[in-house]
Structures are given as C-alpha cells and as structure tokens.
Image (tube, rainbow, N blue to C red; front, top):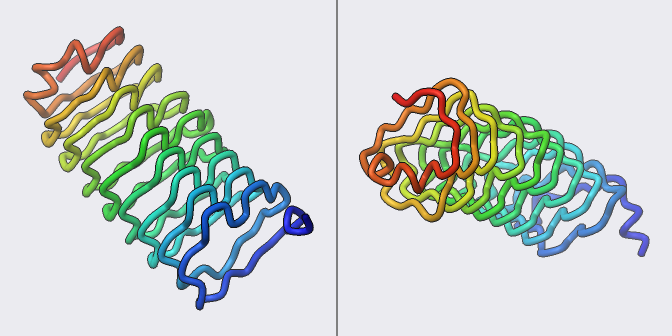
Length: 212
C-alpha cells in the first residue's frame, strides 16, 4: 500500500488518539509532527517504522503495547502526564538514554527489552511497578529504583553489568529474580528490609563487589 511509503506525517490538534497499528510497518516513516491533542498512543502504533525521534506531548496519558517496538528510535521525550507504559513499548529500538517522568506509575513487562544501545535510564518518583524483564538485554550501567516502587517483577535487570545499583525503601513484592545473573562492579545500596530478607532470591547468581 502507498501508506507504507510515507516519510512524514502531521497529526492535527483535533486528533485525540493514535489508533492501534496506525503506522505499523511503515518503514520509511521518519518524522511525525503535531500530535498536540492526543491523549493515547495505541498498541503497535509505530511498530517497525523508520521513526528516529519523537516527542510524546504532555496530553498523552497512556502508551500502548509495542507502540514503538522495532522502530529506529534514537531519541524519545516522554510527556509529563503519561501514567502507563505498555508492555514491549520500546523494545528493539536504538534509544541510548531515557528519562521516565514522575507521572508514570506502571512500566509494562519487557518495556525496553533487547534495546542493546540503551545505557542510561532515570526512573520517575511515582513509579510503583517495574514489569518483568523490562531492561533485559540492554546496556544500562547503573540504576536507582525510587522509594515509590513497590513491585519488582522477574528478570527486570537480568544479566547486566552495572557499576552501581540502589533499591529504594518502598519495595514490598519481588517476583522471581529481578537481578538474575547481573554483575555490580562498584556497590549495591539496599534501603529496604524486605529486599534484604529476600536477598538470595533477588540477586540469584549475581556477582556483587560491595553492599551498603
């Protein structure tokens, strides 16, 4: 279809949502502008596109499943009213650094999985759950889990090489082994007795230099 040959799209302010699979497999699509009125980005909306950079406006509250999966994204700005990031939303992209705003409360499973270029992640202070294998097969070098986080799912930081890791005071639920097979070369800071009580589960098969 001709739509697959799109290179740029302008979305007017009157549009309030980007539907599921709206631009799926539009591999030539590199630029999307406008979007000032949208409140949601649907599942698979930009799946496997050529999109390299995108600013998610502050009007958006939800990012759907696989919304940007397999795209050529190198830069993303996530708006300050996004509440949820769907599963596998940014998997297999080319992002190098991401800031999760304080508005986000839930990050879905596999949100950034296989994003091998991703080196820096800043987690917002309203986040309550980090989904399973969220950062598996990324290249992040350190992580600070904020005090707001209550649930850490299995394999979130699996098989990484981190210089430092900090786990906040709010964790009350750990599923599986979130740090399975990860090396922490400098120091691990744990601010939570629940994590300490479940230490061997949380850090199964890990190599940790020092614990604070």
